[in-house]
Amino acid sequence: MFRMTIYDKKLYTTEEVAKILQVDPESIRRYVRSGELKSVLLGSKFIRVSKEDLDNYISQRKSSLQELPPVKSGNIWHSPLNVYWNIQKLTNELGQDGLEKHKQYKVIRESQIAAVIALVMFRLRNIPAYVQMYKPDPPDALVMQPSLTNKGQLDISTLEITQYRGNANESLFDQLRRTKIGPRINTLSAFYILVVDLWPGIKISEEEFTQIRDYLMENKTPYPVWVIQEKEKHPDTIAELTIVNPELHKITINVGESAHIYKQLGAPDVQRVRRVGNKNLVRTEKAEKYYKAPWEIIE
Image (cartoon, rainbow, N blue to C red):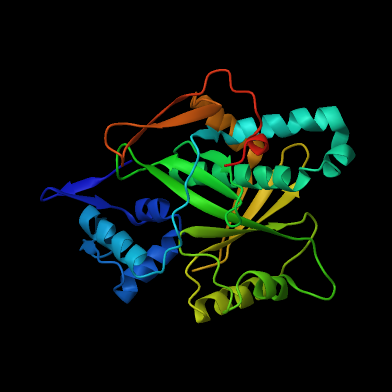
């Protein structure tokens, strides 16, 4: 990562801060304009954020929101490539129709969505991301990446995954308001990402996305909402991610291409995480001879 150092202070660019906070750069500019995030100006237009101000912003954001009890993650993490490999193996054995009738199909589908989100996070931050499925609800899945700012620590994103298959009597906005984002539904904190698995072929207009975004902002919803949809399957799987809030932002990801780039890193298919002397620090290592699929061992 490129950083500028002036007067012994590390300064991040807008794009670097956006990757760390997992939002789009325009959201960072909005935080700066509102005074929510302190910054310095280099020349007449180059915004830079010091590490100190960024750490303060992250700390204030966490302390100002009600946090749910911490999620206790397990020690086995699967790469998104390993998730896809296990799904393909099961598909070859059962066929697509058989897979969709499998008793664990829901969690298998959630594993696939979590793998795509992990690839998105990998492309946003250029750091390997790993998946772990989770039994209590919420969350449905966890995505882990080594921290960009704190060596020896892990950034773990909690994913709550819901599905929208299209309904003539209920729009996506109405379903989310009824089940997930209503003002009296307080199951998710700022440390969650609500992921909507939008069934292929369903069309959501920009106006409805804007309606959802405005509703989330009006109700001060503390967590982001990401809508993921498979747009093409052949010759490559193309997925489109719509980050709904705080600002509407679309990301198109070629799953095969991203998986190829990921593979070039040489990262293990399955990682085991172990604590070291300091309880706040961890080390990761390749999990030798690990054959279970992500959904076969759910923490």
